Image 1: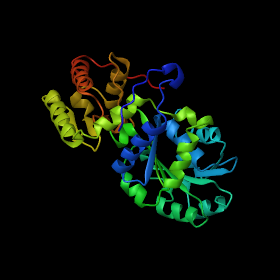
Image 2: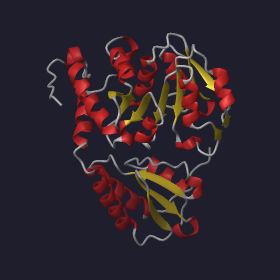
Image 3: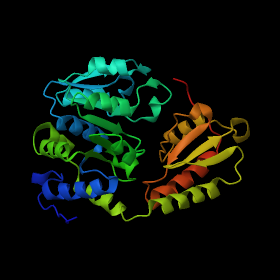
Length: 320
């Protein structure tokens, strides 16, 4: 990737454009196994750009009602910003093939699917038949994968555009990724040169940080960090670490640990420095910690803060 030194920030506003963005997109496409890719400022920017890439111009973009997740606001609002007409399929816990085929028409600009852990266990049509129903009507499929899981599998399953967060998919900086078919990515890049698409342009230093991270052995670093965290928490009763693809799950047994996962999450989120954890399974005694993208100083801060917090009495978290 060529180096860019910005001596005119009053004109560039610190945004990556042209060859710099193309070089970074090519490198990311090779990394995730896509035909082409471009990058944006944040995941919300990538959702907006993917919608712009199908050029909706007031046409419907369909999605499962259960997939209207929050990304800097409801997903449907990002689609409206792209001049699409959001159309929800089914209900928040059920969507069948019949529901899908009743909504999709030749006028539909795209069919959007969210690969989201929070949607598991519901009666929702799986991606392959959803994509088949869309492609049978000539409708491109946009797959949004905020958790960054199984990127190659989602592309193999027929995603025409894949929307990712670099933080979760590549353990990188806060960038969004739009990857997939060359023609649709070309539309996305064209949209970034004018109009609303310019809102999605990333900063050059974020691109440089992402590409520098490709040279890092993330698996070895993650294994080392799991071991360090295990050593730091060793001897504390009622605490158990379980490895995950992103880091660890901290499992707490309240009677033995003297606190609950929910109370610990609240204490970490309201202390200083603030530590944000994935507490969606807190009622089952679990906190998920993503250790992949922290720099070394931040990881050391995590170790110290966890130790200090667990050394003190942890008050009960308030209920909403």
